[in-house]
Length: 435
Image (cartoon, rainbow, N blue to C red; front, side, top):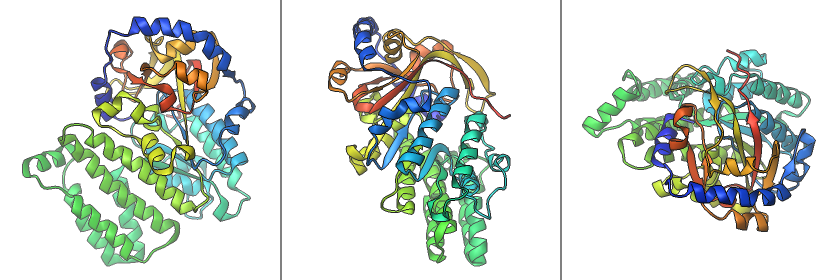
């Protein structure tokens, strides 16, 4: 979760009037939650959850933090079962498209792709490294590679990134593609991209925009037109087109910081969903996908305080576009443990405490059941009617300060409207990082 989410979380500070009242509610609901809880120890214990996933086009899997091992492990186990038993075609994660597209070429056994999982993961080179360069992800990529080994090329399951931060890598991949197609088109693309690359960094670019009122949006759009004029097809064309869209939407995302409100957040969130849409189209009319992203992205924003700031997310956009019945959102949370994060953006990775959840929170309510790990279907009538109130719900990003958690890491939420199901693990630990 990016630094921009930290800004939102600081804006979404909860009123201090309600915690005592909600704490009473937590105790009152603990017995009801116990009755509806489905405990799990292995992937086989998720049978009832998979039974609820029938014809949905997208399954969105969240996380309460980007540095927690159990969230990755159980999302991987659920994803494997959805792929094997339900025929899902791809996993798309909150990671960079350029790096993940090279990993995709590995897991799909493409001749142009990396030869080993280690070589594939070397393309993950942007902070925060721990988020994707970890053993949990490596194990999943190894599994996908083996799963695809004997499958026809057009039936192999893919692995992609929905994020837009690696704009420089995206632009470089565009130029490389065009050089293979038409050297003159590549030269035109390079000249257009200098509109942004001539600046030392994004801050210098934004200073120019703020001072002059001019920006590079049209230049970047022009490169997308060059790609479409190239006459390409298949994966190389799709990948180049997506990289061009990464550059376009990254510029809009950064430029949104010069505006008030949720413009920056929404540009990124819209790109997440655009990527999911394009992947569904790429795989065909019957395709189905799995998205991994933070709870703040996959849980419907309309059921949170984020909506009051004018923010939307992939959970909301998917349900609005595909229909409620075609999207299944699964939130993940914890009560306490350890987590990897930095104290500041691009800061050093720290092994931090995840302190016991604040009084009056959703996590405190779940902990009161006394169960170690379980999942719930939030659309069960008796349960959903008891949770139709605004409840603080934990959200930890890649930047985090446990000492300030209660003031800025909770989002007021109507849970049955935000998720279809929720997976709770009482105590969680850190990712097994490779670096």
